[in-house]
Amino acid sequence: MSAAVPPGPPGPSSLAVAAGAVAEAAARIAGHVRCTPLLPGLPAPGRRRSGWGLLLKAEHLQYGGSFKLRGAANAVLALGAGAIVAGSSGNHGLALARLARPLGIEVTVVLAAGASPVKAAAIRALGGRTVSVSGGVADRDARAEELAKETGALLVPSSDHELVVAGQGTVGREILAEVPDVRTLYVPVGGGGLLAGVCLAAREHPVRVVGVEPAATPRYARSLAAGRPVRLAPSDTVADGLRAQAPGVVTYPIVRDRVDELIAVSDAEVLAAAALLRRRGVAAEPSGAVALAGALRAGRDAGRAVAVVSGGNTAEALAAAAGDLAEHGRNGDRGEHGKHE
Image 1 (cartoon, rainbow, N blue to C red):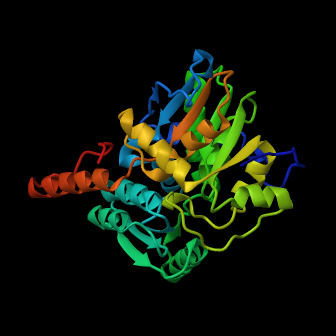
Image 2: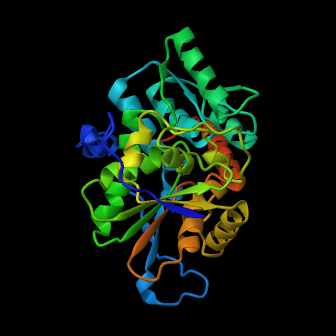
């Protein structure tokens, strides 16, 4: 399932408002994130022409295991805070806890029902506090906002914040710098922070930006079809990091004004893409394989393309990280800032 996105009128948070924000974010977070590599790509089944040229942006190799560190670092470093509250499916919370630890910042992460218990444990192992709610992502984010107001902590949303979006946009900035002739970018879509950030990075570049959503949560496709943000009911998908129920106030107009196409992929396609990545030595979690699933569904022959492998925080990876943390604790070593945990 896919839908081309017709151009719409600029909104109050249009692309022009954020001109320069991604470059500023890149400079701000340079000492806290790594420029992840582009890995050799994968041919779509039955397509052997070299011209397809699919590459993989390896954000599963980012410090903390996902692209989320970029937006978290940009917001925290720009705003400054002694305490932070965030709603998260897991990776944003992990990024904040990892970033906050050497800075002495208190972090509280609110998790919705169905959030990965392994990720919750990893957040606590990094020194963060977790709070669980019984509802979906909307309930999670509402509770995070309440806690921030009650405690005076800084609220750092997982996607719907100008600084978070600009930080995530550095993924697209790196791709376009390394592969200026890229024809298509495939980007996974949850809350939309990564897609909006890539849209900002690509605002003046003639590249097709394609967002890939789990079929169970097509919130951006439905919203753009309706001409306004639409909230979906809580849903279930193997891509547990992409369960956001509605586009954000910041992200929606940016995506609306720049995205070229939205593709929906089934859980079976996501799992198949994750298995294909594993066979190639890329340990992606299901959410991290969604963009590849979209690229394989599109299956275009012509032009170079890049799919973002957005995260690699599998249960195995997090168990290994927990072991490293325990070893550091026994050695009295709090860990060097910037080391992959």
